[in-house]
Amino acid sequence: MEQNKAPIYEALQKFKSMRIVPFDVPGHKRGKGSPELTAFLGQQCMSVDVNSMKPLDNLCHPVSVIREAEELAADAFGARHAFFMVNGTTSAVQAMVFSAVREGEKIILPRNVHRSAINALVLNGAVPVYVNPGVNKRLGIPLGMSVEDVQNAIDKNPDAKAVFVNNPTYYGVCSDLKRIVEIAHRAGMPVLVDEAHGTHFYFGDGFPVSAMAAGADMAAVSMHKNGGSLTQSSFLLINNYISEGYTRQIINLTQTTSGSYLLMSSLDLSRKNLALNGRGIYKRVLDMAEYARSEVNKIGGYYAFGRELIDGKAVYDFDLAKLSIHTRDIGLAGIEVYDILRDDYDIQIEFGDIGNILAIISVGDTRLMIERLISSLSQIEHIHKRPSAGMLDHEYITPEVVTTPKQAFYSPKRAVPVEKSSGMVCSEFVMCYPPGIPILAPGERITGEILEYIAYAKEKGCFMTGTEDVELNYINVAAAGKR
Image (cartoon, rainbow, N blue to C red):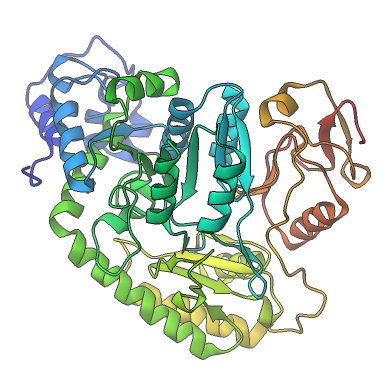
């Protein structure tokens, strides 16, 4: 297809030249009704913040320019069809789950999924069959799912309806996606892939296999994370025999009927850019990431990890565009380095947890920015290094699942002091955000080890979310209480 085209963007350009008088929404009427916002965002932006109309198509039921843009995106990503998602990758992940499983049906998935996947289970009542990821003891991080563990889950749950995979994890770890697809398809189960951090897999050399290339059935791709589009814009890709019409029906259950043309045009133009220039772009990204990894490891104390982690099982491959750095050996939690970088050096990285940090390197980075990050990390090591004794050494705690997320979330509940909740069944989420992987999900047993982790994360400054009590002094538990 003609990947140099951008149908939505081109339609908006034509629309602007028509000088249409607006008696529709949005009420700011091309910015005239909101001068302060127009001064902040610019007239160019406000002039294309428009509503669906015949010349611009309709996201809920596209038949012209949006339809053409979807077909171009599908061609660029090697998918059978692509959907423009303007409620973020969260909505794409949830659309995958809703389309594959219904209430009471099982879905096999790793426990270190993003909250959006478990939120989907809260909403539709599907039953999770968790595959506990491997754990790297030195780094304390959750890894991928081994093929053996997925096969065991399928053998024990032949009635499961789908398999869900992270590709990659937040830290850059990839499972053996091709083999997982093979064994899942052999069992009659579609494979759903959270590819929020894997846009570049489709447009570069030297990266892990993409979901579509591996033969997966659906993939949620976060173009805004490292593909250049605006925040909250993503693609949902389908493959094989997945119904386009039914998938769109599922999407329309939750996605807005007022699709933002700012978000859609950003997807359209970013797809065009990657389709035409992606290999050169991601070659530069990969070179910068490899340089940064090498220089950080020369500092001493830090460990910027990469493909040396590959073991053919829980780490089948590694995304070298990820700059994941272990910080515990300099006596600082990742969140502490995160805070120092922002507060003292004006550098904002993606996240810090209790032992690691992640810096996203993508299409907009420069060598100068990389040098600044490296020199700042060197100064932090020199100024702040301290003994690491007594630091918590793991990010992932294997959960004890008592009931389904939906049953726990909607069951009668009561709030109890966090420190008195051990042994009870959690009925809400507890997580550090980012990355948004639950420490506790609804339906899981609260243990002393989990409470120790929560207290430590709070002490180190992690941003704790998910609980009704914003201070996380109290936690909601199932009213029945202890075992």
